[in-house]
Image (cartoon, rainbow over all chains, first blue to last red; front, side, top):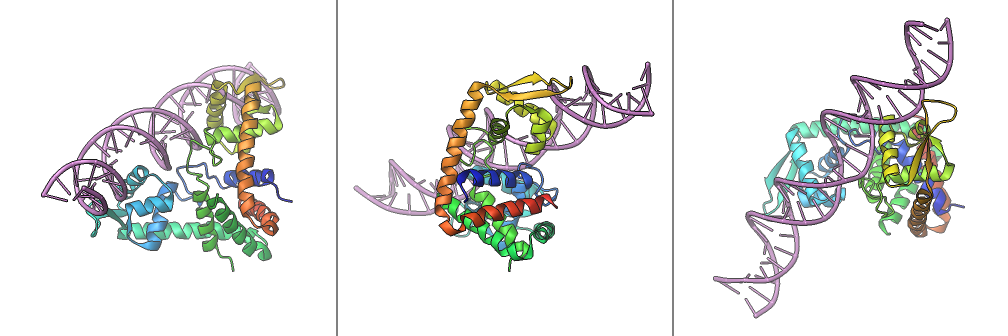
Length: 142
Length: 142
DNA sequence: CGCCATGGTTCGACCGTACAACTAGATGGT
DNA sequence: ACCATCTAGTTGTACGGTCGAACCATGGCG
């Protein structure tokens, strides 16, 4: 009988266990700011993105996103180019080093999550994934 | 067939959907810093705690915890008293206003999570809770 | 009594976010 | 064509959050 109190406790524990407080490293132990890791993931998966689009996906303010992209550029991982269809817009795209960095990150992440999955009983893995998805959708719908 | 990649995506989406980036308000929309909310929850549930104990529960560094407690005191929500059994230690305890604040927070949290649970199909609620717990334990074991 | 461990505080550094004010390009109605 | 308005981004300001290191006090132990 799951009530909201239990759910809240479970979420709180999950958040703390995963070190989601820690702003300067990913839960995977990579020495890269977590917001940059998220951005890197999106850009690696979907290629060039409008900055506003990136903001929407990461659920960040445009100003925050702007700064974030500037960081990535400072590291040599991304570049800005004018949007072809809109003079105001900016396209953000990974550079080759950025692609490499994203791949390295993806690998570390996979290793971490793989280790976690190993600790989840075989038969429950699908359930865990499905539950997380269900919960996310429920949150989104709120 | 749950693989680590899917799990990683699911976790990332969950984190973003719940606005866990936002440091200055709880996912429940209460205008209170999230770290203070966590601390308030622990103190409300278990009463007076050694500061070091609080740090352990919140998985924070002692320096961070010290500041955090100072914040709570500034708000008039908590007080420090010397630990009776150890001259070095400090006991942290909620004040009456702190108890009130914690109760208000708990209420908002309950409302939020209740709304989320409403969106989860009846038959899956226990699964969601169990999955979250399983996952947290798996993370802890890593 | 000295040595090391433990609990806390303070300092400095950095990440992460939002909101507000501003610039510049796009859009739509008159 | 023009002007009001909207949208995309940038920059400034403020604040929350975290850590590690340096430091002090107390405790435990040989």
